[in-house]
Image (tube, rainbow, N blue to C red; front, side):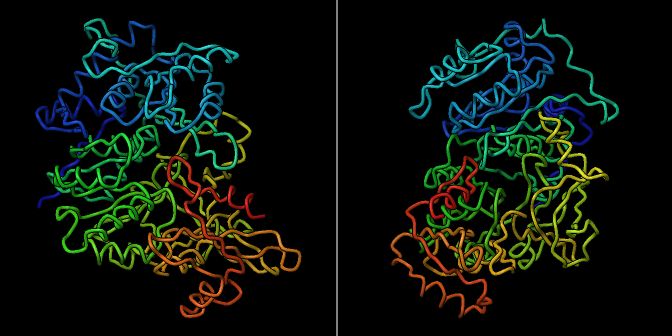
Amino acid sequence: MAAAEPLLGARTLWELVDRRAAATPDHTILSDEHGRHLTCAELRDEIERCAAGLFDLGIRAGTTVSWQLPSRFETVVLSCALARLGAVQNPIIPIYGAREAGAMLDQSASEWFVVPGTWRGVDYTAMAEKLCGESAHGFAPLVVDARLGDPGFPNADPAGLPEPPVPADDPADEQIRWIYTTSGTTSLPKGVLHTDGALLAAGTGLGYALEFQAGDTIVFPVPWAHIGGPDGLVALLTWGIHTVLMEMFVPARAVELIREYGAAYTGGATAMYQALLAEQRARPDEPLVPTLRHFMGGGGPKPPELFFEVQREMGVRIVHGYGMTECPMITNGSPSDTDEQLAYTDGAPIRDCEVRIVREDGTLAAPGEEGAVRVRGPMLFRGYLDPAQTAEAFDADGFFATGDLGVVREDGHLAVTGRTKDVIIRKGENVGAQEVEAVLYEHPSVGAVAVIGLPDAERGERVCAVIELVDGAAPLTLADVQAHCRNVGLSQRKWPEQVEVVDAMPRNPTMKILKFQLKEQYS
């Protein structure tokens, strides 16, 4: 199969939408689980009509609009319509509650808050009205629960639309058009400031890494309000990749959609890989989806053993990546990488991204030496809403301190080894939590694991493993876990000294395990 050809040169998201519609007007670019489809030209036209409807409501270039919507056609169209107008948009993941949403509305000084009415049993209209009443600056709630073209969805004749904002010739002159939110795993979310150019650079880099083939289809189960939303949107528009949206990730339904559309890619996070592997194990006699070639995603560690399990049992390779809200794409695996590279690293830096590993004294680490991960490039955010947080985040060379530890190998691939704050100091020696987690995941009874440090009068910190078992597995004891560590050759100083078995890990909306909650629970 021939490689897909990218459509390059756009400087804004709207320009990319418009160029794609002109290049392949009749190509189906979006489908959804409800059987709806949009061609590239239809997507552009829907965006224009929605932009006109929003313009009639008073939304202009520079107007700040928060939206908390599920992954639907309507969300993609509304978000692109805001980009067409040059508005500043603040996407909020639907699973966030009033506390997190209210914090972002206040921080970003939003003038509008778009919600989906009632969705999955949550009355977002009531929440929006309550937050509006409590807001110090006030905003206008806008309920969008109608489908494209139906009464209630913003829609007007685009003939009266103003011209799109002129793209900046110099990236330094780009306007802030996006306020994304951090995961908020330890505190209220922070506002992360992005430009169209940053999101275009990230999504384009992702597309190059994934090496799309002409005719590929992706089933996309990640919340569109997540930073992965524009990553996916830019990649699919740049390469013309047919994308199938899911409002919520339900493993069995994802399998149905992958089969129905003959998808080559799906994924989003390690927990999704594990869930689809479980679906395969429930039907071991045949490949779950013969067309599926790759799981893609990021958002947290990928145990090496999981790569080999998925490849062996499903015939699928994991092309995992590494990024964060502040830098949507940093590294990513590629289909042309070796199995060893895909299993044991987080990929090579994407196009135009610089990765630097720094020792504690600030000097550059040698290849293969662990240190703090810092990044620089056009996909990097432009700062936080709080200038003080921005000042602390960058070094003198303009590199962003990610808060992660990692190693850049001789082959240029990055292996993220843990968080700078995820190192357990036991009897004065460092124990990397992620290394121990990778070892424990190899145990056949372990479905998910988090290794945390707990206060200990004798050791300073002791190593505690919190384990979620695979379905039907017998409970694991501390002796079982330590025997496994001995058998695989893990240094005894790194062995867990406490084991807790849980029914389900606490996770945030992007499926990251909330270690701070586990530490609070077991300290």
